[in-house]
View 1: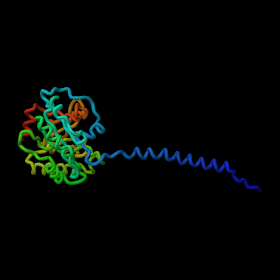
View 2: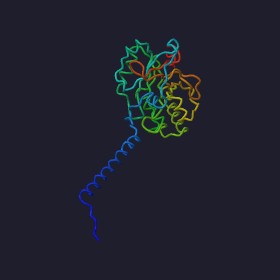
View 3: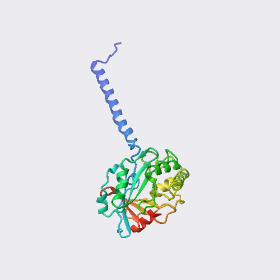
View 4: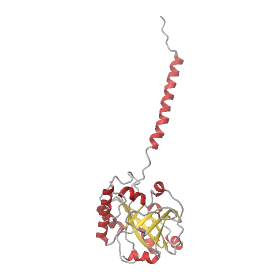
Length: 274
């Protein structure tokens, strides 16, 4: 019985079909893998409000006036050298500058930003971006104080601020349970007060605080700096009946991040004086 053997054309067709199938698999698998791996920013690049829009969105601007809300800004290294005279002329009267992050980063623009705001007449302070998954709260408080977070009773220096919010480098809650997060924050605050004599300001969002601390209400002695990009500050975290500061936008003039102090300039001065 004769045996049929495929000719050169049949073999060639089979080879081409195989290549097409392989290419099709690659086209369908590579984009899916890439989509599942979000870009992680480099350590040290975090700043106040970095995750607010992504996690909570933005909806309008405050409708109140500066007569009862004193305008401020917060800055970090990504803004570079800041035009402080321009901000002063626009009505900004207080500012916070990122000093440190974790125990591995200090802001290379800190001198220009921190002393520059002071030089034009602003009341200024420093903040620390917390990374509770890297070292203890007390360790990071010491690092902060040693790298720009000190307080002096000169009437122009605000108490240091703890920026505790969405983790841009991984798990939203830095792989902490709510009780573990509360312990970490308490250790930071206690050590900061032991070093400076002041209660640190807490910067956060209500949704992050609810998710990652279980809406813990035991830090009311610390001034609250709430982040919400909307026409009102909205519901506050447990324990606080009012906010001290409110970051209301990341797209304001000159530097992007703009804030309101809950009171006239004399209340900003009172916080600085302790």
